[in-house]
Structure formats: structure tokens, C-alpha cells
Image 1 (cartoon, rainbow, N blue to C red):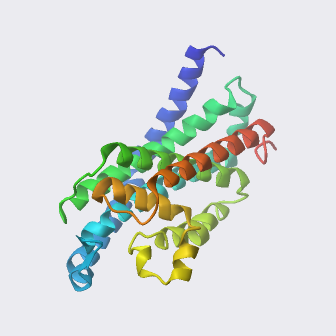
Image 2: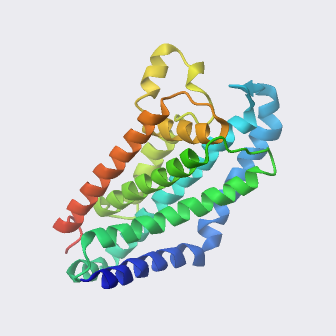
Image 3: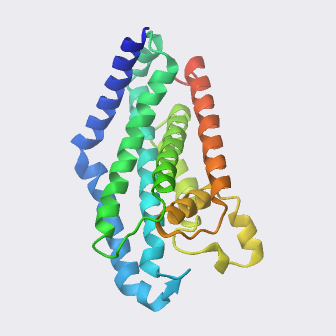
Length: 257
């Protein structure tokens, strides 16, 4: 395929993915917004004042970056895993595999679709947070870069989950038993400096901790980890998952009947 044909294939997949989740926005965009508003109400008006300041900021200011990142992670992942598994379940993925479209174009199309949903939900949550606190940006390049890379990383993870899933139940196992615990234990609601030394060291094995803290640094200028190391780690994971996803597509792993 020449570059123009590849672009047409890529843009077609992306447009299809974006239309899919915007068409059912009552299921894909509204629920995260409502959930986050409840978090803001609980932590902003009920629990937050009782906790007081954390790392020099009010509690609601401290948790807002984590809640935004949590929304981006969840929606980037769920969009790709549900969409690609649906394509696999309906056997329409076989048409993609026998077409002349390169594997990386197929993968990028689904990943960018997931990134779009993650970023849109993240933007909605950010706008809603302005009703509860004054949100300031300390470092725009860091903020934009880490939220984009995180969305890419979890869109790729969702793609891999969809490839190996054998039923619709399988696509909910990883989010329920892996993604949710890692997110809640990733420094969204607390600073790891509050933890005993052993648990601080154990928390360092949680990759989501680095993403949340880097995003918090971009917004508030505070962090519990090394930002440069966090970027290296996230980029490394993205490259590894991208390469593995291409390998799965090229082999047709669990995709061809």
C-alpha cells in the first residue's frame, strides 16, 4: 500500500472508533463524569476539609490530578478492549488481517481511537474539577506528554487483553482485578511519603504511581518520584507493548478461526 492508501485505512479505523463511542455517549462519556463529580463532592466538601492540607495543597487540589489520570487510564483501556474484542467476536477482524493494510496501521487506528476517548473524558473531568477547585498548570509540556503517553500505554494494554480474551467476561477480569487495585494504590488519594518505608518501597513497583505523580507534578509542581525516570519507564512500556501487539497481529494469535 502506498502512503495515501495507508492514511485512508488509518483514518477510517480512527473515525469508526470515535463515532462508536460518541454515538453511545450516554454509556461512554456521561458515567465517568458523574462518577468523578461524586468523588469531588465527597473529597472536596465532606472528607477534604477534615483531612486538611497534603504536600502544601488542600486535599481536593491534591487528588484532582489523580482523578483525572484515573479517568484517562480507565477509558483508554476500556475503549480498545471492548471495541477490538467486538470485532474479533464478530469475525470481522479476519477481513482486516487478510487485507493489504499493514499491522501497524490497524494497531495505530485502534490505539488512537482509545486515546481520543481517554483524552476527551480527561478533558471533561478537568472542566468539572474547575467547579470545585482552582486548577493551575505548573508545566504544560510535562502535563500534555504524560497524559498522552499514559493513554497510549493503556490503549495498547487494552488491545492485548482483547486479543487473548475468549469471552466478554475475560475483558473485565484485568480491569477488575489488576487495573483498579493498581490505580487506587497508585497515589491517587495519598502521598506515598505517608506510608512506612517498606510500603513505600513496595509502591515503587506500581507503574501507575509514576504516571499519577508525573501528572501531579505537571499540574501542581509536586511529586514523590523522579519525573525523568517516570518518562523513561512509560516510553519503554509503550514501545514493548507496541512491539508485542504487532507480533500478535502478524501471527494472527487467537484472531484466525
